[in-house]
Amino acid sequence: MREYLLTLCITAAVTYLLTGPVRKFAIVAGAMPEIRARDVHREPTPRLGGIAMFFGLCAGLLVADHLKNLNEVFAKSNEPRALLSGAALIWLIGVLDDKFEIDALIKLGGQMIAAGVMVMQGLTILWLPVPGVGTVSLTPWQGTLLTVALVVITINAVNFVDGLDGLAAGMVCIASAAFFMYAYRIWYGYGLEAAAPATLFAAVLMGMCLGFLPHNMHPARIFMGDSGSMLIGLVLAAGAISVTGQVDPDAMNLFSGSERATVHQTVPVYIPLLLPLTIIAVPAADLVLAIVRRTWRGQSPFAADRGHLHHRLLEIGHSHSRAVLIMYFWSALIAFGTLGYSVNSASMWIVLGIVVLSAVGLVLLLLPRFTPRAPQWAESFVPPRYRRRRGTAAKPLPAAAYAGSGQARQEERRTPVVAGVSGVNGATAIGTRARMERRRTESSR
Image (cartoon, rainbow, N blue to C red; front, top):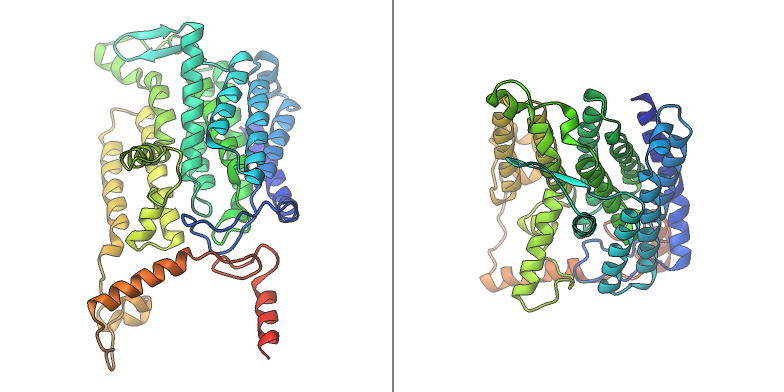
């Protein structure tokens, strides 16, 4: 465990320290696209944050290769090298897209090639545990197709959810934390060395996200871009593929005792079928809804719009930070809820806790629909929006004026801001807000 934590810390430190210089490089290279209608941020922000994340990945794997216990992962398995090869390819495609805006079909082809590179080096699904049937061996073609499909789905699910500051990195960090606990339990609890690569991948992925999040939280100073979102999606998929298709369920020796006990004991065998789906449940749901929505409108499934889940949270009335925290909450609930059920599937407290937390999540989700007013004695302790209005009330406006004002605010939020003008993101892509405000004051004088 100490070596895994050391690898995580080294990855996070390298990613954090390199993100600042990468931001300056992105500004010089002109990797700051103009504000689009579907964007939430108000000022041009540099991309290419995936460069720092990729070098953090390389540093983490390099350190793990020189540690006493983790070195066995590289000696007994070729999966870390397969991951690095596929990650380098998908990262290069992402960097080109952040700079030159590559066509969506070309990116899709690159994702398939990156998955194929990992398959050729041994990172593939060899068998599947099917409930009621047992372990089913796959042919090479079946394993290849299933592996490529899982990689492409995971990459695009993470890419689709990357729409708010810190959203994709935080959700993937939560998912990788749950996945690390599961893979470590399989490796250490059952003594299966085949789960060691997946545990390493999860630790490195957590370090990449934790190192990048301080720069990417609202207001973000840099975006990870496709070079980062596709990279962390591929690493997440690689861990799921490793623990699902490489770990032999029969080696756990769980099929003993009574029939009821066997059902409860074999839950960890079938969790690999569900965990890779639960850790991307929210991004995958957003992906499916986006494809259905765009196809229903007669648009291309790859056409961008403002109908994603995080956009809908903003339209309901949530602030930027609250929308991100709500997405974090649901991701953690699904991932850690599944993890807890895999540890003790017979406990009703786990199921009851998941139900209660789901109800809390629904209340938080619909909170802007209600406008509670605090009693007079508690008004000094609550934010102004919850206090009762006093004094002369403003004259009511006609309905058309209300509609027009809302539309004007919507248009104002979507109006692009040229580079160098400060907005809601604190620091601009060129300098700090204070410097720009000082220049504006001097010019007005």
